[in-house]
Image (cartoon, rainbow, N blue to C red; front, side):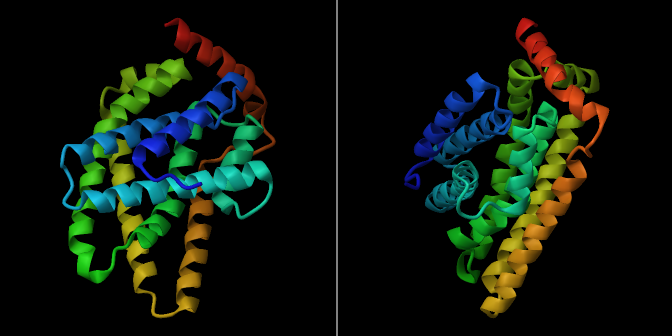
Length: 248
């Protein structure tokens, strides 16, 4: 059953974490990060940071449902799993990725593929477009504020190396990540607008196909290229890396 509130979205993320973390499922990395961001959005909405809070609640729920639907279809082996999510989940199941790759691959699939669809479903018609564009950009600021917390949480739970690199680079990586997220979300907005403004179903379907192809192409660029020695070393490396994260 789809979530009715943002708190229900967070509760569903907690269920996934409780299921995945004890068995070392690599998908937990993205969900833990997504949970932090969702809580940040929930607080920002409650604090009155958006012009149209009801729309933001609707968008956040629809956006999360795109992810939950992909997870459910993948786990049940039925229904549609977007190609980019199929790759992300397969890599996690095969334990061929680092914690940083878990995070970036999940963000690519969710922002590049899912966000334009969620914007279309939540409604960005011409009469509301300007105010909702401003709320979309406000959400960028909230995401930017969440980056430090996400990196701290992921490095403390899963990756000592990620935390070490974060401390080594100062705030440079946060800035680059913030810029990358903003750029991806800008493109997601323009693609969402294109979906809304499509003159007919054929154009709409073609846009969805292009969206899927783009998300898959970006995910493939970030994915490890098997067979490789690194891919075989990932599982023991991650166990060592996580142990160090908990130790320090």
